Image (cartoon, rainbow over all chains, first blue to last red; front, top):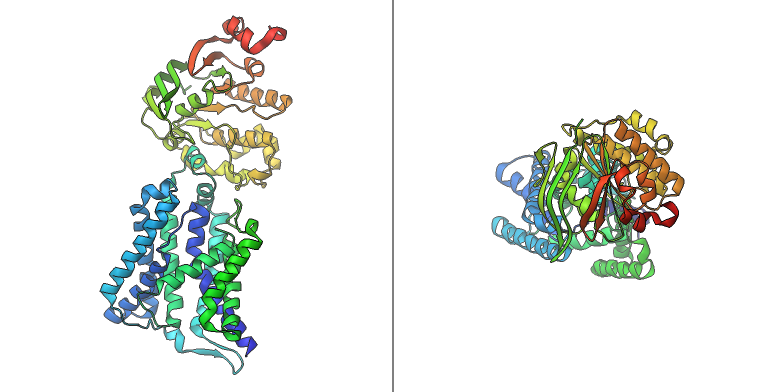
Length: 289
Length: 243
């Protein structure tokens, strides 16, 4: 086994996990809400970018921001559709409704884009960096760099900006926020739009690594769930670390044991962590760290 | 001077049970009115209803005007923006925000609120302790500091009418006196305040008008001078030793 190469792979996959999960982390941390349509929104991000490139001939660099915009609109649409459920924090029904929303997205994508595997091609995917011992594509470097920028940017916005303070207020105590004169609904809308935009952005960067199918959503939502729970429900910094560690774990597990059991072993790991240290999982009040 | 509050036929109900039923309550501009009553009399329910705010979901009816403007259908958020600012009992500041973030968070809403918006420097003059603690988060503050911060952030929002729900709760007697004296200073400066308080002895020292609430109804009301000798107040709240 080439340890250095597996380490590099783990870091790249880990950043992919973290970037895919960042929107849900904010959603859970700030709004205490879940979105089980998250994986299908990832799939939509990848397919919208693919469709823009293959149908209209747009370059990859132009398809990415457009797919992100569509993702933001999808997120905002979701919040409008489930407005009452989001404002009343009705988690069980929201879980079911978002699961259904995801299924509708998957069905619509199947009708619109077909059932064949497609390839979202990035020009950076073909550029190989590194030498004989360790190599990766330029796309991988972009993925890692973009993930770090998104996490640092989110951290800065939450800690330093007025809007970030509003998000933290909504996260801590929405009724009290109203007494400060803060309108809560637009903050929720922005959080959902960020969730949609972030997962679409992640999709456009991660999807060029493998062929895409309209059914790829499920695995993404599974991994996101693990990252968010291991990271300490809704903790931004925690999700980054959890994504990274999970990436290293899956890379070495695939190399040492078998790629076929990776997802199952990730769940075994999740169960062990939940049994051994349940108290460490809940981010108590300070999700913006 | 502004902040004249008029309430008519206010009813607050949880499920089927009517918790508060007040036919009339008024607060004159630039005065401090205090509602006293035993635990469970409905004091918090009453003052929360004036802000149209609650952590539960009561049904409200009745008419509320401030300076003649009808506020009956205005949401809690818009009441705060229009200068009817509530400092709730207990959790009144954000634990995850620093003192200064708490003080800055509400200020954007103050335009058009109608009262006087206190600048940050004025707040720190009024509560020097908050200046020392300005970089600490709410969770790191003592109970007294939190209460000061809760009132201070309300002052930042340019209140016409400041609604205070038991600011003395959990504070040492010396701090209660200091806090109420500060509130009195603000009233003397033109602020209109409605206070709900269980600490009757301390409240009497600073209040202009006193209301007595029992089982959700106002059973007596008047100037402090008149109410001080009211046998119901002496018997229930001041006890033999103070009478």
